[in-house]
Image (cartoon, rainbow, N blue to C red; front, side, top):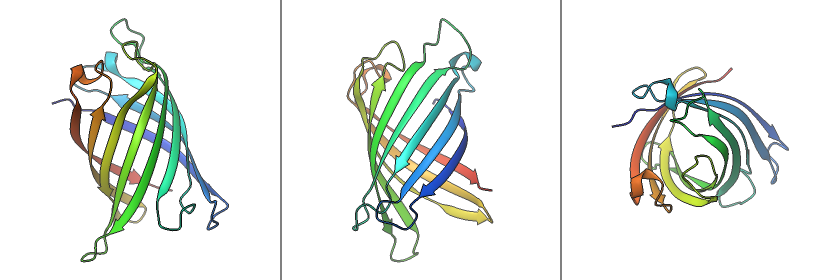
Length: 173
């Protein structure tokens, strides 16, 4: 089993708040840490997303993300250097018993040659579900489960798809 730890620093701002065309902008930095492989496999990413949370009255939320990735450490064994573009749709469902919000998502990613093995193409579709629990003031815990359908045989050793889970701990200030 592969472990990945992602360290994320984001800045979020909402423009035209509470209007039909409210635009949520997020600019961020991610450090991808692969503890079992050592720092040679680690990578970094700078990216930005735009989300339109109120554009559809029935709750569907479109978003777009662009990120630039590169190796955290120069190495011949690691060849991460390129752009990724992600188009996604989200929809929140409220559990009638607990009032807990469950966020459903569907996304597809365009690989702008992030790794040398892959072509420039739409290469994955990802479906997910997550929820958030407030565990203290300004601190939340968000578990998620995701399924990825791989459309490029060069990814994931030719596997058609993979299931993974994650947990995020967030603090806002």
